[in-house]
Image (cartoon, rainbow, N blue to C red; front, top):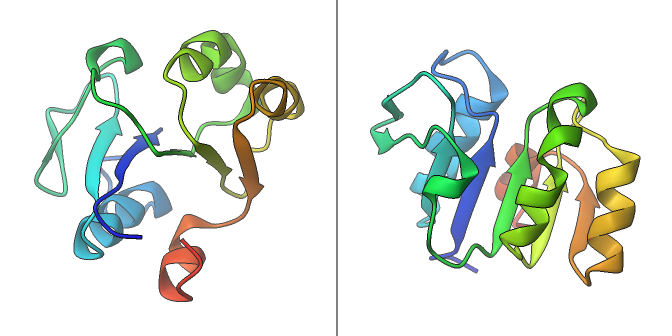
Length: 122
């Protein structure tokens, strides 16, 4: 489904990083992308948000590129956004976030956003 509002949490300004490639590919597939990075102003031509709190629209998907140590303190903020689903990319798995998300009726997928986009599973 195109035209989703998608947060890329842990987006990187470095083009070789998968999170940067995800921003690019999500835009190419017609999604509205909200990259989150504390220091960058833009990633792949998209306005970058320093904090989750800076995003005010309804989010369909939050794709996670932060490790457990960085995502755990953000669990309450992530859940307060009420995304319909969370994608935990390889290396970003967080059992506590997954449990709490499922308790909040948020779908959780452990998979790669890039692969999901390229295989029509996004």
